[in-house]
Length: 234
Image (cartoon, rainbow, N blue to C red; front, side, top):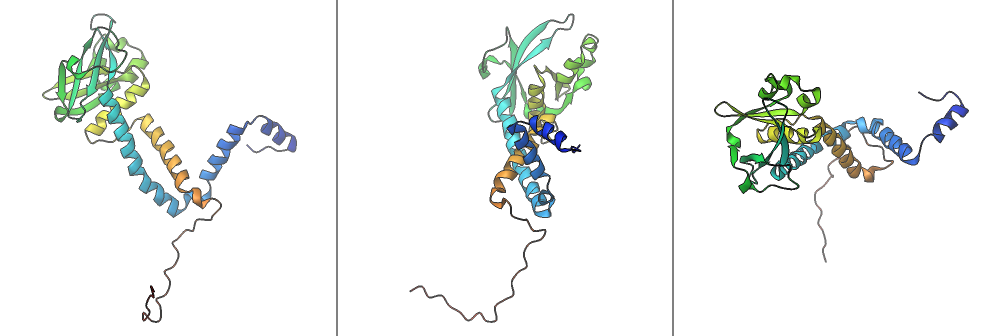
């Protein structure tokens, strides 16, 4: 809401620091009519596939590094640990139980079980996961449901996960969807996409500061009256 008097304006300005004013100015610039013009919209559409591919590679790289997950017992809520990571050629998921949470990357030779990526049928999340449908798991709180996902693979087996936090949940569900050639639809992907596209747009438009962007390309000049001309390179 705009201030209705000079005093209100002064009071509002006193409450804004430099970083906040800079953020508001950049937000206003990005919402100007120039950024809604057809050339800018077209540029954004061209940039988006490049940014999505960058996000995809980051997700797959994180899966190759691997993560530690907690494992819930069937009879009582007993926390155990296991580790899962993607092979460097993106063809196999390696996993295995651990005695305690690791401090770093776990070598492939310590992970005794594996699933070929070609055998993976789908990725389930939340209440659709088999381990969330069990009687003991239904008593878990909402946080556990939001961090649960499962890999369904041939013939009719599942590998069940409970991510340590929302970030790891998004990384793994995005990465697994990318492996299957499906859309990465997590909140983290949408946030990363908006941030990276905004940064790339600003970098590419630096040279157009205070220049009006036309709605249409300039007209093609008329053909010369004669093509009878030469270049003298001497």
